[in-house]
Amino acid sequence: MATQLRPIALTVSEPRPGLFHWALLESQGEHSEFESRFAMAEEPYDSFEKAARAGLLNWLKLAGDDAKHGPRTAEKRTPLVPAPGPWTPKAHRKTSTA
Image (cartoon, rainbow, N blue to C red; front, side, top):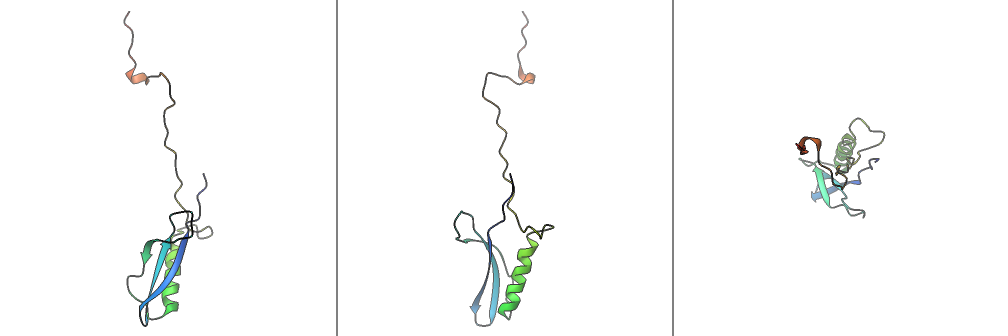
């Protein structure tokens, strides 16, 4: 199963005049609603541009060594389930002594 590009958005807010914070938001569903904030500036920046550049650099870091393809979701693995049937693992098989 191929991994998907993570739906991440960069936003910059100005909670007080002249102080800017970046945040990376991720959508958890199929819709375009970005609710989950998973990375944000620890300290404010003195301009929108500085905050936006810092946020973009952090976004790019999420791609790790694969900057060409961007940050990907983890591959979902299906757990192995034994096939139904009347079988018993070898270690637990009863041997007949007849």
